[in-house]
Each structure stands twice: as C-alpha cells, then as structure tokens.
Length: 73
Ligand SMILES: [Cu+2]
Image 1: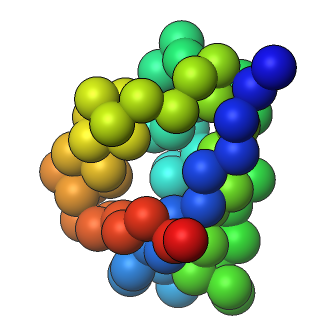
Image 2: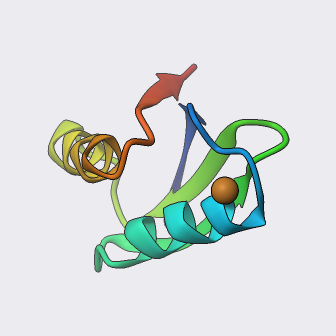
C-alpha cells in the first residue's frame, strides 16, 4: 500500500519547472510516482510510506532548488 501526499509548490512558472520538480522528487527511492502541475502549483507524490522524515527530505530538496513546498491537508 502506498500513500499519497500533496504539496503546494511555489515558484513554478512553466513546464520546465514542473519537470525539474518531478526530477527532484523522483530522485528519492521512497517516491513511487510524482505528478506535478505548475498551473495548479501542486505536486501529488506517491510514497512507499509517508513518514515525517521523508516529507522533510522532499521539502528540503525542493527548497534547495528554490521551489519551497508546503504540505496540503
Ligand atoms: Cu519554469
């Protein structure tokens, strides 16, 4: 069973941004899939298991690339 986590992602303005965010997220082995929309400012991430640690790591990696992300409930 995988878990879905949604992030609000800032600073995405084109397909290149969506692709960059997707690439960053998919670098993590825990990430099964990532669907990113720059228009919606959203990333829907499928995780093996949604622990606070992995969520923190994803947010850190995105923030480092100037795409700050916050968790959506
Ligand atoms: Cu862009």
